[in-house]
Image (tube, rainbow over all chains, first blue to last red; front, side, top):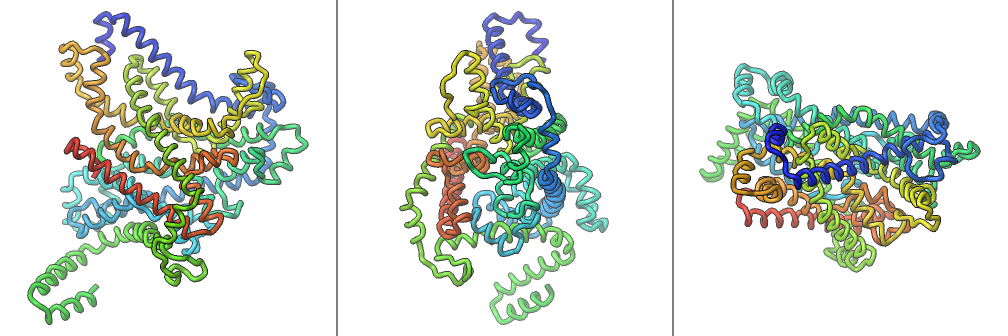
Length: 301
Length: 329
């Protein structure tokens, strides 16, 4: 609509200048957000001694995949990668099942105690016990050093639950009521009536939960000690820390790098790229659904 | 369910009529609930989750008022009142963490909160749809990347030995020393605030751009007829229409004033800059998880939670005073 308007009416010079400035600033911002990722990927496929000179990398210098072949020999990165995938998939499934099973009753008017439980859940968004009591609880439950410690304590996000409940409430209640009168049980109604109508909100929450699981870091540091049960983020962190500020990384990593003529920086960049490239590949799809999801949440919530 | 029901009835017969009525109501409700028990069964796991993982830790807050001993357990540890808080507020390390939290958080609100609004206004001015899409897509990318990865990228980019700054400087003939901005007390807080804006700006624009696209075009036409230029349209139409959205997001942001970004700082900071970047969360982690000082750490965490709650209620009340319809609660 705007486009036709600007064609019909001659745009004043000041507007044109303003537009040029805005286009330039936005272009610069886009460059500033994209370049670091490009830099890392280019760095990881450059020969170490050439990369050490620093500066901007628009193209790889003396391209080589040596860092990746060294990385492929590292068993831990595969283990932690696998753990991250398991955590994300299992965690997200549990998230969705748990969230839907509480969001649906709370969206039904005849549910006795609906307001009470809504308030109980809402309050958890305003106030929390904090890190230490939660840690001690997880410890008491005997979940330390198991995948469940990463999945169960966050199995429902109150915020996401409300997004889903609000979506359920936007479905005409007559549908649910008539199914109920016809004798369909609540789980049946949820699965065969509510869920098919709520695909967008399930997709959105699957993304929210999934991304949170994949990127989650602190809880893994808190609850998991055993490196073979650790997730990718923590392992990446330990790799990145190999030389940063004298902190000690994994001895095995340093031993593997020593004697190959490859700098630790290049190794780190390869590891970072290995974790970022899959995300970048699915990113166009990811962002499309993510944007939709945020809008479902913000308009109805 | 039947047993408890009978008990209540037999207890009620001995008491007055009001209690009898109440019991009749409860009985009726229980009957309805029993007929619909699957609905309640469905809600049970979720309710149990919130009670177990959210309310039990809230009870665990009492650790902050007890001389907690991990071997004795919570119940057997003696109550000491506010002694632990007194001790906490006298700890220089905690006070430093509190000050750092507030400074960093304020920096993030003052510079970070308007950033997506300004960016949205600029993106909205772009006529070319492809360019618009490109900019939107690019600025959103960092939101999907974890702080661990971003911290790793930043260490390399800003490395004084092989980073971008060094390369660019030497290109221009500068061969002197390059400051390590990641390990420098005077620059590290800027690094935190700017990297936070860099990562989260795109996410913020989603909501604002949607709100902008929902503005009635007639408002702009009316403004143009009234002689409003671009700036005045932006101020009186766009920003005025965005106000409810801005208020709600600001309440939520101010409520989290003591959330200075645990993940971010935990992954970015290093011993050289602890002094300017130790925040309450990282302090709680160090004191509680690493040093097993559970009482002090819980007290620090509780202080943070309480301030958060107070801030939300306060900002909510203020925004309601200004505008009845605004606000979160």
